[in-house]
Image (tube, rainbow, N blue to C red):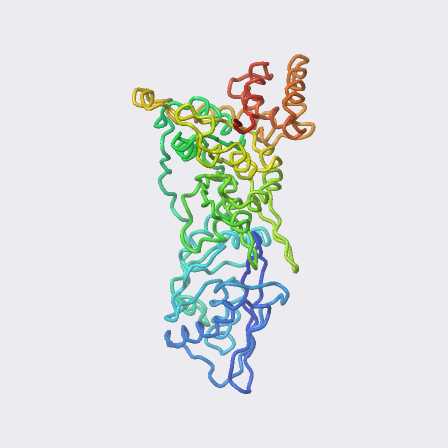
Length: 506
């Protein structure tokens, strides 16, 4: 037949809408016309497919005019994922494979010039979309081997793995004398990640306590202190306090990571850890591009985003974090369409109090003028600081005390307390304490008359906003959960108030 229809999928943010690849062969001036809002990478498929067919000893229709339509026409198509469906469409339209068998499959894969299949981005998102739309009962997926191993994690979707174009062609030959493609096996779970131990950090009991509270309630943390005081060491060990991801959380996180990774994904079930350099742009942090791709805050979904040297980030990049910190989502708007990405990350930030880093230090004198220190601190806006629940000072530890200090508490012991506190919060309210809002916050973080009066007095004296008031309540609820207390006591409330500190001033 001269017309073949092949099914595939595109990527649109975290969605993977279905795409129909229509291939028509007609008499006329030989050539290939590719239509359907195709990006440059897709248009280059003409040369890759031609070379792959010829080197695989398959026939290229040299005396035909080939028209390839990618429908729907108004959906942008990008990357080399359409190489395989275009090649199969040309082979079906020219009678080299059985076109009747194509209805049972969805194809995606990039072709090398030798016909080998290379992995594509978003394999997990494609499988999730197929399972959601059809319940996994209509079409099987044919993907490159590495991509198929990702997609096979989605229950209810049949995924076939292929390493070469010829394997797919042999499976689509007319009649029953075919070589079926093997079903893909899900990637084997790697050994659990061994995070650095928190006990390796000498001293810094206050900062360790703040990290424990943050891990229990999902709160953000800002650590302020001179260079070499251990801020980065503490942040790098924070992930050792967090429990593994649940299956649903792991699936969401892996689907986002698959949008940027063509090969194997990081360890399954491990919380993402992202630490971009302070030269990162706003688009790198929150996402962007055309078509839009997820940024660091989305790649850290259900995980940790560590921003070291926080004031050194571009101001507009930091301000772009405001809404995601509040809502857990980011919407990237373009003239033609909007893209939605989840961004429920945990922010761990570190900074020096001034350009030289020694403002307020008892070890070395600060050489910055008051104006220089104020300008440096003003790089962080009030609204951004207002959204960070815990702000803790990390002072320099004297060398004598550092050498003689005993090892601290192991991460496993702290993680056990954190797991109990998180489970207590989830059983009580269904979410971690950082996500409490509205009536749920009033019910689960209720104060007695004395506590309410104490908190209101502190809020007025320190000039808090309503957001700061409510965030302090959430932190106090996490402290109470760590202590196994059903109600928030006055000492727990006082500890939470201490973490709403301002930056050090002269």
